[in-house]
Length: 87
Image (cartoon, rainbow, N blue to C red):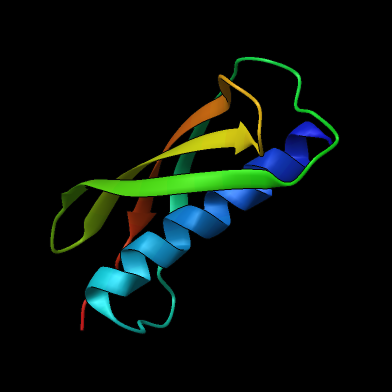
């Protein structure tokens, strides 16, 4: 499983977390994505667990932990920021 695939999964998890809190907002976009790759993923399903660190009026800061299903240890730890356009 490639690094860009892990990043895409993490970005999708961040998007889901943010939109679950603010509702459907057009043009909410990723402004920052930082990935720490910690170990090689297994050839199994990937699991991403996202959380919100801070939700403001214009920015949402998130964290995502990515695992290989059934295996111990993180594959990647991701932090990111979403820009929320004014309503």
